[in-house]
Length: 349
Image (cartoon, rainbow, N blue to C red; front, side, top):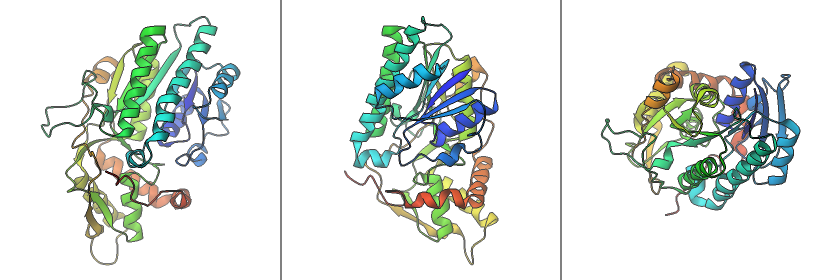
């Protein structure tokens, strides 16, 4: 299968690219190379015979049309998006342009190509989204997001992704475009851009800086190892039911404070500091505006219909992630100089 992956230089997109190539698929990686993209993320497969890179922006419809015409993919995995909640609070315009208008352009380019090919039934457009579109959950462990949970986005990022989800469903219902959708919980793992919680905590700890936790650290997230997520995404693409959505979770709920303390304990073992624990660097800072209390995925549909479930516990995944950052300073060090990285963003109320 030849797969067009949008956003394949990003964190999740590059994991999909690496796994797809490893499984024998051809991949066309289309990426605008914005601030969070990193070409080193796919350096291990860049010379593979089934790999091609297209430098293009999903806001550019003509570039998308040229890419479809030149490469004639069998499927699209749409991951290109602005994704950092704090940046969406400071600058929501970029999130609307990329996540909403860019998704519209990608849908229209895919639809034009699909129609031009005679509407092949095997074509798929897989839209990759987030559990943040569902809003916030109570702390009741029996209450989780399902595919039927009403949308209730609370941040500009979440609202832009909710909008893109609705567009994808509308293009399926109105035009018959064969789509599948997925909404995932918080990802982590190697190649995670160092503005997100886990890499920030690892790198700040190593640098002797404060480990800033929003509010009292009681916000709960369901953590999904990125390589598990890539496996789930390819499963949905190849075996999912057209028009269906699938929630993908790690089945690993932790409060932010619990997560950071686990990271500190791992670092204490792997790279002990001189005196004390890395947990001594934990500080509490003003909470993010509109900070959702809890996310948790009910993965029953993907487990029962497609036979998928996560393979990595959060403790195993965090240990592997910490070791990766310890071993790959040449990857993350230059990224710390990019705009906004290491700064507190999203404080505007």
